Figure 1 (cartoon, rainbow, N blue to C red):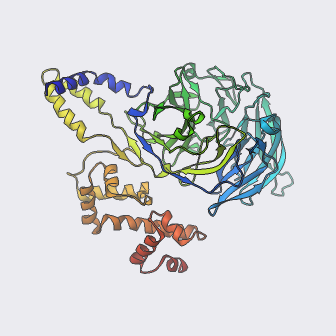
Figure 2: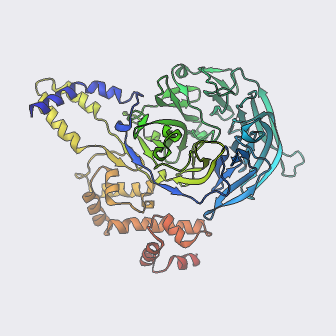
Figure 3: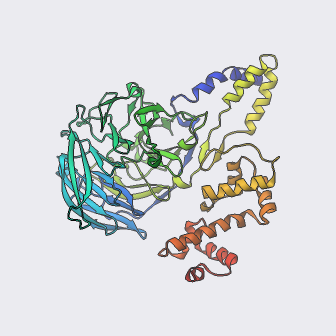
Amino acid sequence: MNKSLSILFCWLTALPLMGQASKAPVGGDASSCPVLEVETLQLPDLNIARGGHQVFCVNGEYVVAGGHTNGFVPTPTAEYFKDGEWHLMQMTYSHDFGVSAKLKSGKVLIAGGCEQPSGIGQTYNAELYDPETHTFRGFGILQRKRTWASALELDSGEAVIAGNWYHNDGIEMFYEAQSAKGDHQYRQSFNFIRDVATQRSTPTILRIANDDALIFGPYGIKGDTVKTAYAYRLKGDSVHIPLFDTWQPISIGCRQADANFIGDESEGDFTSLVPVKDSTGQVAIVRFSGTEATLLPTACPIPMMCKGDSIVYFNITADRQAGRAYLFGISKNYQTLQEEAYTYILSIDYAHDSANGAPITLYYTEPLEFIPDFSPILTPEGHLLIAGGLGNGSNFTPTDNAYLLLVGDQPVSIQKSHAHLWLILWLMFGACPLVFAGIYLYKYIRRRRQTIVREQPIDLTILQDGSDEELMERIRETMKSRKLFLNSNLKVADLAALLGTNSRYVSRCINVCENRSFSDFVNDYRIEYAKQLMIKHPEMKVGSAGTASGFSSEQTFFRIFKQATSQTPGDWRSKL
Protein backbone atom coordinates (compact mmCIF):
# COMPACT_ATOMS: atom_id res chain seq x y z
CA MET A 1 0.00 0.00 0.00
CA ASN A 2 2.82 2.41 0.92
CA LYS A 3 4.55 1.71 -2.39
CA SER A 4 1.33 2.48 -4.32
CA LEU A 5 0.90 5.75 -2.46
CA SER A 6 4.51 6.71 -3.16
CA ILE A 7 3.92 6.19 -6.87
CA LEU A 8 0.80 8.31 -6.69
CA PHE A 9 2.71 11.04 -4.88
CA CYS A 10 5.41 11.18 -7.55
CA TRP A 11 2.77 11.12 -10.28
CA LEU A 12 0.83 13.98 -8.70
CA THR A 13 3.87 16.23 -8.34
CA ALA A 14 4.61 15.82 -12.07
CA LEU A 15 1.10 16.58 -13.30
CA PRO A 16 1.56 20.30 -14.03
CA LEU A 17 4.30 19.38 -16.49
CA MET A 18 2.25 16.53 -17.94
CA GLY A 19 -0.61 18.86 -18.70
CA GLN A 20 1.70 21.02 -20.82
CA ALA A 21 3.46 18.13 -22.51
CA SER A 22 0.18 16.65 -23.76
CA LYS A 23 -0.18 19.55 -26.17
CA ALA A 24 3.37 19.58 -27.47
CA PRO A 25 4.03 17.98 -30.87
CA VAL A 26 6.37 15.38 -29.41
CA GLY A 27 6.11 12.00 -31.11
CA GLY A 28 7.13 8.43 -30.49
CA ASP A 29 5.26 5.18 -30.77
CA ALA A 30 1.48 4.88 -30.81
CA SER A 31 1.18 3.96 -27.12
CA SER A 32 -0.21 7.39 -26.19
CA CYS A 33 -2.66 7.52 -29.09
CA PRO A 34 -5.77 5.34 -29.55
CA VAL A 35 -5.04 2.73 -32.24
CA LEU A 36 -7.80 0.83 -34.05
CA GLU A 37 -8.00 -1.39 -37.11
CA VAL A 38 -10.13 0.04 -39.90
CA GLU A 39 -12.24 -2.22 -42.08
CA THR A 40 -11.39 -2.33 -45.79
CA LEU A 41 -13.72 -3.24 -48.62
CA GLN A 42 -12.04 -4.54 -51.75
CA LEU A 43 -13.77 -3.30 -54.88
CA PRO A 44 -13.64 -5.11 -58.22
CA ASP A 45 -10.27 -4.78 -59.92
CA LEU A 46 -9.63 -2.00 -62.43
CA ASN A 47 -9.67 -3.02 -66.09
CA ILE A 48 -6.10 -1.76 -66.46
CA ALA A 49 -3.35 -1.77 -63.85
CA ARG A 50 -2.07 1.79 -63.48
CA GLY A 51 0.13 4.15 -61.50
CA GLY A 52 0.90 7.85 -61.84
CA HIS A 53 -2.79 8.39 -62.62
CA GLN A 54 -5.44 10.86 -61.46
CA VAL A 55 -8.19 9.79 -59.09
CA PHE A 56 -11.26 11.86 -58.29
CA CYS A 57 -14.92 11.59 -57.42
CA VAL A 58 -17.30 13.55 -59.61
CA ASN A 59 -21.04 13.29 -60.19
CA GLY A 60 -21.15 10.63 -57.47
CA GLU A 61 -18.78 8.32 -59.37
CA TYR A 62 -15.21 7.23 -58.69
CA VAL A 63 -12.93 7.94 -61.66
CA VAL A 64 -9.32 6.96 -62.40
CA ALA A 65 -7.70 8.61 -65.43
CA GLY A 66 -4.44 8.24 -67.33
CA GLY A 67 -1.14 7.24 -65.80
CA HIS A 68 1.00 4.33 -66.91
CA THR A 69 0.47 0.59 -66.98
CA ASN A 70 2.79 -2.44 -66.94
CA GLY A 71 6.27 -1.68 -68.27
CA PHE A 72 5.95 2.00 -67.31
CA VAL A 73 4.03 2.64 -70.54
CA PRO A 74 1.55 5.59 -70.56
CA THR A 75 -2.10 4.61 -71.06
CA PRO A 76 -4.63 7.03 -72.59
CA THR A 77 -7.52 5.34 -70.81
CA ALA A 78 -9.78 6.08 -67.87
CA GLU A 79 -12.39 4.18 -65.85
CA TYR A 80 -15.43 5.11 -63.81
CA PHE A 81 -17.12 2.98 -61.16
CA LYS A 82 -20.86 2.41 -61.47
CA ASP A 83 -23.25 -0.45 -60.69
CA GLY A 84 -20.51 -2.42 -59.00
CA GLU A 85 -17.98 -2.43 -61.81
CA TRP A 86 -15.36 -0.30 -63.56
CA HIS A 87 -16.24 0.97 -67.03
CA LEU A 88 -13.38 1.69 -69.46
CA MET A 89 -13.17 5.04 -71.33
CA GLN A 90 -10.84 6.42 -73.98
CA MET A 91 -8.92 9.60 -73.24
CA THR A 92 -7.31 12.00 -75.69
CA TYR A 93 -3.92 11.83 -73.93
CA SER A 94 -2.31 9.69 -71.22
CA HIS A 95 -1.25 12.32 -68.61
CA ASP A 96 1.21 10.11 -66.76
CA PHE A 97 1.98 12.07 -63.55
CA GLY A 98 -0.17 14.89 -64.86
CA VAL A 99 -2.40 17.27 -62.94
CA SER A 100 -6.16 17.52 -62.49
CA ALA A 101 -8.65 19.96 -60.97
CA LYS A 102 -12.39 19.65 -60.49
CA LEU A 103 -14.18 22.70 -61.90
CA LYS A 104 -17.36 24.44 -60.79
CA SER A 105 -18.80 23.68 -64.22
CA GLY A 106 -18.91 20.03 -63.16
CA LYS A 107 -16.10 19.07 -65.55
CA VAL A 108 -12.56 18.04 -64.65
CA LEU A 109 -9.44 19.62 -66.10
CA ILE A 110 -6.58 17.16 -66.78
CA ALA A 111 -3.29 18.42 -68.17
CA GLY A 112 0.42 17.78 -68.57
CA GLY A 113 2.26 14.57 -67.79
CA CYS A 114 5.28 12.64 -69.04
CA GLU A 115 5.96 12.74 -72.77
CA GLN A 116 7.47 9.25 -73.09
CA PRO A 117 7.42 5.88 -71.32
CA SER A 118 9.49 5.42 -68.15
CA GLY A 119 8.47 8.88 -66.92
CA ILE A 120 10.57 10.86 -69.38
CA GLY A 121 9.84 14.42 -70.47
CA GLN A 122 6.82 16.71 -70.11
CA THR A 123 3.81 17.62 -72.24
CA TYR A 124 1.58 20.63 -72.95
CA ASN A 125 -1.59 18.58 -73.54
CA ALA A 126 -4.86 19.48 -71.82
CA GLU A 127 -8.37 18.03 -71.94
CA LEU A 128 -11.69 18.16 -70.11
CA TYR A 129 -13.66 15.25 -68.71
CA ASP A 130 -17.45 15.51 -68.82
CA PRO A 131 -18.98 13.15 -66.22
CA GLU A 132 -22.45 13.50 -67.72
CA THR A 133 -21.39 11.94 -71.01
CA HIS A 134 -18.30 10.05 -69.77
CA THR A 135 -16.23 11.63 -72.53
CA PHE A 136 -12.90 13.44 -72.82
CA ARG A 137 -12.21 16.38 -75.12
CA GLY A 138 -8.78 17.78 -75.90
CA PHE A 139 -9.04 21.55 -76.26
CA GLY A 140 -5.63 23.21 -75.97
CA ILE A 141 -2.21 23.34 -74.42
CA LEU A 142 -0.55 24.65 -71.29
CA GLN A 143 1.61 27.74 -71.56
CA ARG A 144 4.48 25.68 -70.14
CA LYS A 145 4.85 21.92 -70.53
CA ARG A 146 4.60 20.25 -67.14
CA THR A 147 4.62 17.09 -65.11
CA TRP A 148 4.35 16.68 -61.31
CA ALA A 149 2.38 19.91 -61.09
CA SER A 150 -0.51 21.01 -58.85
CA ALA A 151 -3.76 22.73 -59.78
CA LEU A 152 -6.60 24.33 -57.83
CA GLU A 153 -9.70 26.20 -58.96
CA LEU A 154 -10.41 29.37 -56.98
CA ASP A 155 -13.87 30.66 -56.13
CA SER A 156 -13.40 33.24 -58.88
CA GLY A 157 -13.62 30.37 -61.40
CA GLU A 158 -9.96 30.52 -62.39
CA ALA A 159 -7.62 27.59 -61.73
CA VAL A 160 -4.05 28.12 -60.50
CA ILE A 161 -1.42 25.77 -61.95
CA ALA A 162 2.13 25.58 -60.60
CA GLY A 163 5.01 23.13 -60.27
CA ASN A 164 7.10 21.02 -62.63
CA TRP A 165 9.68 18.23 -62.84
CA TYR A 166 13.03 18.62 -64.64
CA HIS A 167 11.67 21.69 -66.43
CA ASN A 168 11.10 25.33 -65.57
CA ASP A 169 8.38 26.05 -63.03
CA GLY A 170 6.08 29.08 -63.11
CA ILE A 171 2.50 30.10 -62.37
CA GLU A 172 -0.26 30.06 -64.96
CA MET A 173 -4.05 30.27 -64.84
CA PHE A 174 -6.78 28.29 -66.56
CA TYR A 175 -10.22 29.76 -67.08
CA GLU A 176 -13.41 29.12 -68.97
CA ALA A 177 -15.31 31.95 -70.63
CA GLN A 178 -18.56 31.95 -72.54
CA SER A 179 -18.22 32.29 -76.28
CA ALA A 180 -18.58 35.82 -77.61
CA LYS A 181 -20.97 34.42 -80.21
CA GLY A 182 -23.60 33.89 -77.53
CA ASP A 183 -24.06 30.26 -78.52
CA HIS A 184 -23.77 29.01 -74.92
CA GLN A 185 -20.45 27.45 -75.78
CA TYR A 186 -17.39 27.92 -73.61
CA ARG A 187 -13.81 28.55 -74.60
CA GLN A 188 -10.92 27.50 -72.44
CA SER A 189 -7.52 29.11 -72.25
CA PHE A 190 -4.30 29.25 -70.22
CA ASN A 191 -2.55 32.52 -69.29
CA PHE A 192 1.01 32.58 -67.96
CA ILE A 193 1.31 34.79 -64.88
CA ARG A 194 5.00 34.84 -63.94
CA ASP A 195 8.18 32.88 -63.37
CA VAL A 196 9.23 31.99 -59.82
CA ALA A 197 12.61 32.30 -58.14
CA THR A 198 12.25 29.06 -56.13
CA GLN A 199 11.09 26.29 -58.43
CA ARG A 200 9.08 23.40 -56.98
CA SER A 201 7.51 20.08 -57.92
CA THR A 202 3.98 19.23 -56.72
CA PRO A 203 3.66 22.35 -54.55
CA THR A 204 0.86 22.89 -52.07
CA ILE A 205 -1.70 25.45 -53.26
CA LEU A 206 -3.98 26.94 -50.60
CA ARG A 207 -6.95 29.21 -51.12
CA ILE A 208 -6.54 32.35 -48.99
CA ALA A 209 -9.27 34.47 -50.65
CA ASN A 210 -11.88 34.16 -53.40
CA ASP A 211 -9.27 35.08 -55.99
CA ASP A 212 -5.96 34.55 -54.21
CA ALA A 213 -3.76 31.59 -53.32
CA LEU A 214 -0.61 30.68 -51.42
CA ILE A 215 1.96 28.37 -53.04
CA PHE A 216 4.79 26.53 -51.25
CA GLY A 217 6.39 23.10 -51.01
CA PRO A 218 9.44 21.15 -49.82
CA TYR A 219 10.80 19.78 -53.10
CA GLY A 220 12.50 21.36 -56.10
CA ILE A 221 12.07 20.42 -59.73
CA LYS A 222 14.80 17.76 -59.51
CA GLY A 223 13.63 16.18 -56.29
CA ASP A 224 15.99 18.31 -54.21
CA THR A 225 14.85 19.69 -50.87
CA VAL A 226 13.78 23.34 -50.89
CA LYS A 227 14.65 24.96 -47.57
CA THR A 228 12.84 28.27 -47.47
CA ALA A 229 10.31 29.84 -45.14
CA TYR A 230 8.78 31.88 -47.95
CA ALA A 231 5.65 31.13 -49.96
CA TYR A 232 4.45 32.67 -53.19
CA ARG A 233 1.23 34.62 -53.18
CA LEU A 234 -0.76 34.64 -56.39
CA LYS A 235 -1.66 38.29 -55.93
CA GLY A 236 1.14 40.05 -54.14
CA ASP A 237 4.72 39.59 -53.00
CA SER A 238 6.21 36.51 -51.42
CA VAL A 239 5.15 35.92 -47.83
CA HIS A 240 7.38 34.86 -44.96
CA ILE A 241 5.86 32.00 -42.93
CA PRO A 242 7.67 32.16 -39.55
CA LEU A 243 6.58 28.65 -38.61
CA PHE A 244 8.45 27.33 -41.67
CA ASP A 245 11.72 28.42 -40.04
CA THR A 246 11.50 25.29 -37.88
CA TRP A 247 8.80 23.16 -39.54
CA GLN A 248 8.98 21.96 -43.14
CA PRO A 249 5.78 21.30 -45.12
CA ILE A 250 5.21 17.74 -46.33
CA SER A 251 4.65 17.27 -50.05
CA ILE A 252 1.05 16.60 -51.06
CA GLY A 253 1.90 14.55 -54.13
CA CYS A 254 0.41 15.40 -57.48
CA ARG A 255 -3.28 14.93 -56.66
CA GLN A 256 -6.14 16.45 -54.68
CA ALA A 257 -4.65 19.91 -54.18
CA ASP A 258 -7.74 21.20 -52.35
CA ALA A 259 -8.30 18.15 -50.16
CA ASN A 260 -6.95 19.90 -47.06
CA PHE A 261 -9.41 22.82 -47.18
CA ILE A 262 -11.62 22.95 -44.05
CA GLY A 263 -13.03 26.48 -44.26
CA ASP A 264 -16.29 27.91 -45.58
CA GLU A 265 -15.81 30.21 -48.54
CA SER A 266 -19.37 31.51 -48.24
CA GLU A 267 -18.44 32.91 -44.81
CA GLY A 268 -15.07 34.21 -45.95
CA ASP A 269 -13.31 31.45 -44.02
CA PHE A 270 -10.30 30.16 -45.96
CA THR A 271 -8.77 27.71 -43.51
CA SER A 272 -6.67 24.69 -44.45
CA LEU A 273 -4.68 22.02 -42.63
CA VAL A 274 -1.14 21.18 -43.75
CA PRO A 275 1.14 18.43 -42.39
CA VAL A 276 4.66 19.52 -41.44
CA LYS A 277 7.74 17.93 -39.91
CA ASP A 278 10.72 19.23 -37.97
CA SER A 279 14.41 18.40 -38.22
CA THR A 280 13.92 15.22 -36.16
CA GLY A 281 11.19 13.94 -38.50
CA GLN A 282 8.37 14.53 -36.01
CA VAL A 283 5.09 15.37 -37.77
CA ALA A 284 2.58 18.01 -36.68
CA ILE A 285 -0.44 19.74 -38.22
CA VAL A 286 -0.50 23.42 -39.18
CA ARG A 287 -3.71 25.42 -39.41
CA PHE A 288 -3.51 28.05 -42.16
CA SER A 289 -5.94 30.98 -41.95
CA GLY A 290 -5.03 33.18 -44.86
CA THR A 291 -1.27 33.60 -44.60
CA GLU A 292 -1.20 33.01 -40.83
CA ALA A 293 0.11 29.58 -39.80
CA THR A 294 -0.17 28.08 -36.31
CA LEU A 295 0.34 24.57 -34.95
CA LEU A 296 -2.88 22.68 -34.27
CA PRO A 297 -2.74 21.25 -30.70
CA THR A 298 -3.69 17.58 -30.51
CA ALA A 299 -4.89 15.59 -27.51
CA CYS A 300 -1.90 13.30 -27.82
CA PRO A 301 1.28 13.47 -29.93
CA ILE A 302 1.09 12.31 -33.54
CA PRO A 303 2.57 8.78 -33.46
CA MET A 304 5.62 8.18 -35.61
CA MET A 305 5.92 4.47 -34.80
CA CYS A 306 3.39 1.63 -34.80
CA LYS A 307 3.75 -2.14 -34.78
CA GLY A 308 7.52 -1.79 -34.56
CA ASP A 309 7.94 0.23 -37.75
CA SER A 310 8.16 3.89 -38.70
CA ILE A 311 5.20 5.68 -40.31
CA VAL A 312 5.74 7.91 -43.33
CA TYR A 313 2.95 10.48 -43.62
CA PHE A 314 1.70 12.23 -46.75
CA ASN A 315 -1.19 14.58 -47.36
CA ILE A 316 -4.37 15.40 -45.48
CA THR A 317 -7.84 14.64 -46.81
CA ALA A 318 -10.56 16.59 -45.00
CA ASP A 319 -14.18 15.61 -44.47
CA ARG A 320 -15.74 18.98 -43.77
CA GLN A 321 -19.18 17.53 -43.10
CA ALA A 322 -17.86 15.28 -40.34
CA GLY A 323 -15.34 17.83 -39.06
CA ARG A 324 -12.48 15.37 -39.49
CA ALA A 325 -9.24 15.31 -41.43
CA TYR A 326 -7.39 12.13 -42.38
CA LEU A 327 -3.60 12.10 -42.57
CA PHE A 328 -2.50 9.25 -44.81
CA GLY A 329 0.63 7.24 -44.06
CA ILE A 330 2.41 4.06 -45.02
CA SER A 331 4.91 1.78 -43.31
CA LYS A 332 8.56 1.82 -44.24
CA ASN A 333 8.27 -1.95 -44.38
CA TYR A 334 6.77 -1.51 -47.83
CA GLN A 335 10.31 -1.49 -49.18
CA THR A 336 11.43 -4.66 -47.37
CA LEU A 337 8.76 -6.81 -45.71
CA GLN A 338 5.59 -6.19 -47.65
CA GLU A 339 3.67 -8.86 -45.73
CA GLU A 340 4.23 -6.75 -42.57
CA ALA A 341 3.59 -3.36 -44.18
CA TYR A 342 0.53 -1.46 -43.03
CA THR A 343 -1.42 1.47 -44.35
CA TYR A 344 -2.24 4.12 -41.74
CA ILE A 345 -4.97 6.74 -41.46
CA LEU A 346 -4.59 9.31 -38.68
CA SER A 347 -8.03 10.77 -37.93
CA ILE A 348 -7.91 14.35 -36.61
CA ASP A 349 -11.20 15.57 -35.13
CA TYR A 350 -10.38 19.23 -35.79
CA ALA A 351 -13.94 20.53 -35.46
CA HIS A 352 -14.07 19.47 -31.82
CA ASP A 353 -10.83 20.99 -30.63
CA SER A 354 -10.81 21.71 -26.91
CA ALA A 355 -8.42 22.85 -24.19
CA ASN A 356 -6.83 19.41 -24.47
CA GLY A 357 -6.35 19.74 -28.23
CA ALA A 358 -8.01 18.04 -31.18
CA PRO A 359 -8.73 14.33 -30.54
CA ILE A 360 -6.78 11.98 -32.82
CA THR A 361 -7.05 8.26 -33.56
CA LEU A 362 -4.61 6.13 -35.54
CA TYR A 363 -6.31 3.60 -37.81
CA TYR A 364 -4.45 0.89 -39.67
CA THR A 365 -5.32 -1.66 -42.33
CA GLU A 366 -4.00 -5.13 -42.68
CA PRO A 367 -1.10 -5.25 -45.19
CA LEU A 368 -2.40 -4.55 -48.69
CA GLU A 369 -1.09 -6.11 -51.87
CA PHE A 370 0.27 -2.84 -53.25
CA ILE A 371 1.66 0.58 -52.35
CA PRO A 372 -0.84 3.41 -52.81
CA ASP A 373 1.09 6.06 -54.73
CA PHE A 374 -1.28 8.86 -53.81
CA SER A 375 -3.35 10.09 -50.89
CA PRO A 376 -6.84 8.57 -50.78
CA ILE A 377 -9.81 10.62 -51.96
CA LEU A 378 -12.96 11.19 -49.94
CA THR A 379 -16.11 9.48 -51.21
CA PRO A 380 -19.65 10.88 -50.86
CA GLU A 381 -20.25 8.29 -48.12
CA GLY A 382 -17.36 9.66 -46.03
CA HIS A 383 -14.99 6.78 -46.76
CA LEU A 384 -11.55 6.87 -48.41
CA LEU A 385 -10.82 5.36 -51.83
CA ILE A 386 -7.48 4.07 -53.07
CA ALA A 387 -7.45 2.65 -56.60
CA GLY A 388 -4.36 1.59 -58.50
CA GLY A 389 -0.81 2.07 -57.33
CA LEU A 390 2.52 0.29 -57.34
CA GLY A 391 2.45 -3.48 -56.98
CA ASN A 392 5.90 -3.88 -55.42
CA GLY A 393 7.10 -0.31 -55.13
CA SER A 394 8.17 -0.23 -58.79
CA ASN A 395 6.69 2.03 -61.46
CA PHE A 396 7.08 -0.86 -63.90
CA THR A 397 4.53 -3.08 -62.12
CA PRO A 398 1.45 -1.06 -61.08
CA THR A 399 -1.62 -2.77 -59.66
CA ASP A 400 -5.30 -2.95 -60.60
CA ASN A 401 -6.50 -3.27 -56.99
CA ALA A 402 -9.07 -0.87 -55.50
CA TYR A 403 -10.14 -0.52 -51.87
CA LEU A 404 -12.49 1.50 -49.75
CA LEU A 405 -11.20 2.32 -46.27
CA LEU A 406 -14.41 2.49 -44.24
CA VAL A 407 -13.41 5.35 -41.97
CA GLY A 408 -16.89 6.85 -42.23
CA ASP A 409 -18.15 4.05 -39.95
CA GLN A 410 -15.27 4.28 -37.49
CA PRO A 411 -15.33 5.80 -34.02
CA VAL A 412 -13.19 8.68 -32.91
CA SER A 413 -11.29 7.83 -29.74
CA ILE A 414 -11.31 10.66 -27.29
CA GLN A 415 -8.38 10.53 -24.92
CA LYS A 416 -9.59 12.67 -22.06
CA SER A 417 -6.96 14.54 -20.09
CA HIS A 418 -7.52 15.31 -16.43
CA ALA A 419 -4.34 17.36 -16.08
CA HIS A 420 -6.25 20.57 -15.34
CA LEU A 421 -8.25 18.79 -12.59
CA TRP A 422 -5.10 17.39 -11.05
CA LEU A 423 -3.45 20.79 -11.04
CA ILE A 424 -6.41 22.45 -9.31
CA LEU A 425 -6.50 19.76 -6.63
CA TRP A 426 -2.76 20.08 -6.12
CA LEU A 427 -3.14 23.78 -5.44
CA MET A 428 -6.18 23.26 -3.19
CA PHE A 429 -5.00 20.43 -0.99
CA GLY A 430 -1.28 20.93 -0.51
CA ALA A 431 0.99 18.31 0.95
CA CYS A 432 -0.84 17.18 4.11
CA PRO A 433 -3.97 15.61 2.64
CA LEU A 434 -2.07 14.57 -0.49
CA VAL A 435 -2.37 10.85 0.17
CA PHE A 436 -6.13 10.99 0.58
CA ALA A 437 -6.51 13.11 -2.54
CA GLY A 438 -4.33 10.69 -4.45
CA ILE A 439 -6.42 7.69 -3.43
CA TYR A 440 -9.65 9.45 -4.37
CA LEU A 441 -8.35 10.66 -7.73
CA TYR A 442 -6.85 7.29 -8.54
CA LYS A 443 -10.26 5.68 -8.13
CA TYR A 444 -11.88 8.51 -10.07
CA ILE A 445 -9.60 8.06 -13.04
CA ARG A 446 -10.21 4.31 -13.08
CA ARG A 447 -13.94 5.02 -13.42
CA ARG A 448 -13.40 7.65 -16.12
CA ARG A 449 -10.94 5.93 -18.43
CA GLN A 450 -10.95 6.91 -22.05
CA THR A 451 -14.23 6.37 -23.81
CA ILE A 452 -14.49 5.51 -27.49
CA VAL A 453 -17.21 7.58 -29.11
CA ARG A 454 -18.40 8.07 -32.65
CA GLU A 455 -18.07 11.51 -34.26
CA GLN A 456 -17.37 14.12 -31.56
CA PRO A 457 -16.66 14.69 -27.87
CA ILE A 458 -19.99 15.32 -26.11
CA ASP A 459 -20.44 16.57 -22.56
CA LEU A 460 -19.61 13.43 -20.61
CA THR A 461 -21.58 14.33 -17.47
CA ILE A 462 -23.43 11.32 -16.06
CA LEU A 463 -27.11 11.96 -16.55
CA GLN A 464 -28.62 9.62 -13.99
CA ASP A 465 -29.85 12.60 -11.92
CA GLY A 466 -31.42 14.35 -14.93
CA SER A 467 -34.90 13.90 -16.27
CA ASP A 468 -35.83 11.15 -18.71
CA GLU A 469 -37.07 13.71 -21.21
CA GLU A 470 -33.80 15.62 -21.12
CA LEU A 471 -31.87 12.46 -21.90
CA MET A 472 -34.42 11.43 -24.54
CA GLU A 473 -33.99 14.75 -26.30
CA ARG A 474 -30.25 14.20 -26.45
CA ILE A 475 -30.79 10.67 -27.75
CA ARG A 476 -33.06 11.91 -30.55
CA GLU A 477 -30.72 14.76 -31.49
CA THR A 478 -27.67 12.50 -31.54
CA MET A 479 -29.36 9.81 -33.63
CA LYS A 480 -30.58 12.37 -36.14
CA SER A 481 -27.52 14.61 -36.44
CA ARG A 482 -24.93 11.82 -36.40
CA LYS A 483 -26.95 9.23 -38.33
CA LEU A 484 -25.83 6.51 -35.95
CA PHE A 485 -28.56 4.26 -37.32
CA LEU A 486 -26.55 3.80 -40.52
CA ASN A 487 -24.25 1.52 -38.54
CA SER A 488 -25.83 -1.93 -38.88
CA ASN A 489 -23.94 -3.07 -35.76
CA LEU A 490 -25.09 -0.17 -33.58
CA LYS A 491 -25.58 -1.23 -29.96
CA VAL A 492 -27.16 0.56 -27.05
CA ALA A 493 -23.72 0.65 -25.43
CA ASP A 494 -22.38 2.69 -28.36
CA LEU A 495 -25.05 5.34 -27.92
CA ALA A 496 -24.61 5.32 -24.16
CA ALA A 497 -20.87 5.88 -24.50
CA LEU A 498 -21.47 8.78 -26.85
CA LEU A 499 -23.81 10.42 -24.33
CA GLY A 500 -21.60 9.80 -21.33
CA THR A 501 -24.08 7.57 -19.51
CA ASN A 502 -24.62 3.81 -19.44
CA SER A 503 -26.73 1.31 -21.36
CA ARG A 504 -29.25 0.84 -18.57
CA TYR A 505 -30.20 4.53 -18.51
CA VAL A 506 -30.52 4.71 -22.31
CA SER A 507 -32.68 1.57 -22.58
CA ARG A 508 -34.91 2.66 -19.71
CA CYS A 509 -35.31 6.16 -21.14
CA ILE A 510 -36.35 4.85 -24.57
CA ASN A 511 -38.76 2.37 -23.00
CA VAL A 512 -40.40 5.07 -20.84
CA CYS A 513 -40.47 7.94 -23.34
CA GLU A 514 -41.00 6.02 -26.58
CA ASN A 515 -42.78 2.93 -25.25
CA ARG A 516 -40.63 0.66 -27.39
CA SER A 517 -37.31 -1.12 -27.44
CA PHE A 518 -33.97 0.30 -28.52
CA SER A 519 -34.02 -1.91 -31.63
CA ASP A 520 -37.46 -0.66 -32.72
CA PHE A 521 -36.42 2.93 -32.02
CA VAL A 522 -33.33 2.64 -34.26
CA ASN A 523 -35.19 0.79 -37.02
CA ASP A 524 -37.71 3.62 -37.32
CA TYR A 525 -34.85 5.95 -38.27
CA ARG A 526 -33.61 3.40 -40.79
CA ILE A 527 -37.03 3.04 -42.38
CA GLU A 528 -37.45 6.79 -42.80
CA TYR A 529 -33.95 7.05 -44.25
CA ALA A 530 -34.68 4.22 -46.70
CA LYS A 531 -37.88 5.99 -47.79
CA GLN A 532 -35.92 9.13 -48.58
CA LEU A 533 -33.37 7.14 -50.57
CA MET A 534 -36.12 5.50 -52.64
CA ILE A 535 -37.67 8.92 -53.32
CA LYS A 536 -34.44 10.69 -54.24
CA HIS A 537 -32.90 7.76 -56.13
CA PRO A 538 -35.64 5.88 -58.02
CA GLU A 539 -32.94 4.00 -59.93
CA MET A 540 -31.66 2.40 -56.72
CA LYS A 541 -32.71 -1.17 -56.03
CA VAL A 542 -35.10 -1.55 -53.13
CA GLY A 543 -32.83 -3.95 -51.28
CA SER A 544 -29.84 -1.66 -51.73
CA ALA A 545 -31.79 1.20 -50.16
CA GLY A 546 -32.34 -0.99 -47.11
CA THR A 547 -28.72 -2.02 -46.61
CA ALA A 548 -27.61 1.57 -47.26
CA SER A 549 -29.92 2.65 -44.44
CA GLY A 550 -28.30 0.49 -41.80
CA PHE A 551 -30.24 -2.78 -42.04
CA SER A 552 -27.98 -5.82 -41.75
CA SER A 553 -29.51 -7.55 -44.78
CA GLU A 554 -32.18 -7.13 -47.45
CA GLN A 555 -34.31 -9.81 -45.78
CA THR A 556 -34.27 -7.94 -42.48
CA PHE A 557 -35.17 -4.71 -44.25
CA PHE A 558 -38.16 -6.26 -46.03
CA ARG A 559 -39.42 -7.88 -42.83
CA ILE A 560 -39.15 -4.82 -40.60
CA PHE A 561 -40.43 -2.43 -43.27
CA LYS A 562 -43.57 -4.52 -43.73
CA GLN A 563 -44.10 -4.78 -39.99
CA ALA A 564 -43.92 -1.00 -39.67
CA THR A 565 -45.93 0.01 -42.76
CA SER A 566 -48.06 -3.07 -43.56
CA GLN A 567 -46.63 -3.10 -47.08
CA THR A 568 -43.43 -4.17 -48.77
CA PRO A 569 -40.85 -1.55 -49.76
CA GLY A 570 -41.62 -2.21 -53.41
CA ASP A 571 -45.35 -1.68 -52.91
CA TRP A 572 -44.66 1.50 -50.95
CA ARG A 573 -42.46 2.92 -53.71
CA SER A 574 -44.91 1.99 -56.46
CA LYS A 575 -47.58 4.09 -54.74
CA LEU A 576 -45.49 7.27 -54.68
